[in-house]
Amino acid sequence: MIEQADGRRDERKTILVVDDTKENLTVLAALLGAEFRVRVANSGERALKSVHMAPVPDLILLDVMMPDMDGYAVLKALCDDPVTRDIPVIFVTAMSADEDEEFGLGLGAVDYVTKPIRAAILLARVRTHLELKRARDVLAALSPFDIGQAAVVIDGHVVAVEDIEGTDGLLARVARLRGEGRIRARAPRGVLVKAPKSGQDLRFDLPTIGPRTVERAVEAGLSGIAIVAGHTIVVEPQAMIAAADAAGLFVTGLPA
Image (cartoon, rainbow, N blue to C red; front, side, top):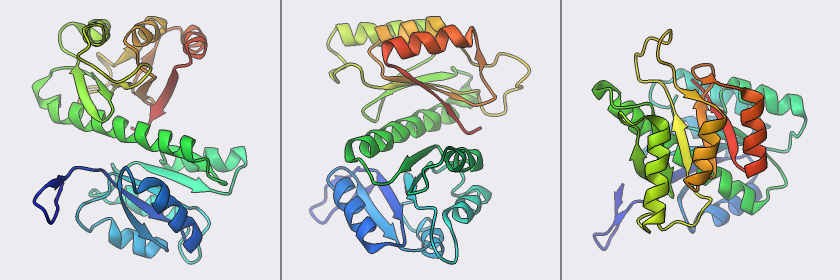
């Protein structure tokens, strides 16, 4: 959070855009600038310096093909640094082959967007991943209190956290809040995030989702569900995917 010259607090999220082409930096800064604070870097080396400047970026848009230090090397350096390893990184690149996307996601990127950039899609991805990070940060902070494994974020605000009621009860509560007009964002909007507690024994009580979770998420007016890859039990996965596809609701995996 930054205090502006007039004393007001600038609560906008900070996006770091990394690209070696000036025109791309200009386009992305113009696209994002109305909603976010935008910082730019025209090389991998400058990006790694910039991430340690206050405020630390909330999300990074990273080109792959850059001289000297490519995006893959930058991402590896970010993941190796305890200060930056949890910053979500979206690759924005002209490399459109399926194997390129698979490789980038395998390195730890949370998403992969190909050029030429479609403004609406990029903005939607950025907003979604900022919401996912917000939910994970809240769940991590609450882990020592053993409160729950799920949270719902809508338009950057945590509107509900799981308690003894479980995930079905959490989603029913969100649906009720929508019905009462206490959540004003138009549906479908918002994400359910499920993640194990910090330090949890992964042999027991893993987060679980299934077709019923999708049904409840739709009733709650959400647009998606995110789970931590490899740390979540998926019940009836094919039926769950079919239900999500039919409802137009996304289900995505997050890096552990």
